[in-house]
Image (cartoon, rainbow, N blue to C red; front, side, top):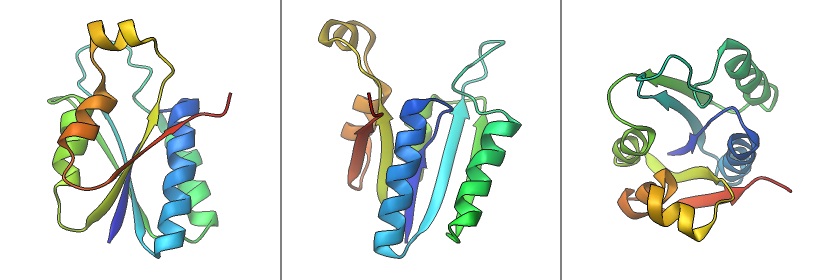
Length: 131
């Protein structure tokens, strides 16, 4: 089985990665780290660069956890990509990080986290970065 972690290079992404690692170790499962961007902007701060992914690889290798990293550029948004991957039969849990936003901001702009919570066919663990 696999714990899927939605990763972005931010405090929220790091919190999701740590929680995903903890869950995978507790369950004795693999980790699938997913980072994605629609590719419709010249710069996307949510799209991990090589040093970001090297840090993730080093952390997972040091902890001796079986892992895979999938980075997708172009096409669908992050929520759609994660929901599709969560539908695989070997994914037991999705872990995502939540940003602190106002209720009005979520109402007007929507939320990728909300899409994942409602659309994933397996349990979702939503974590916040330490303040």
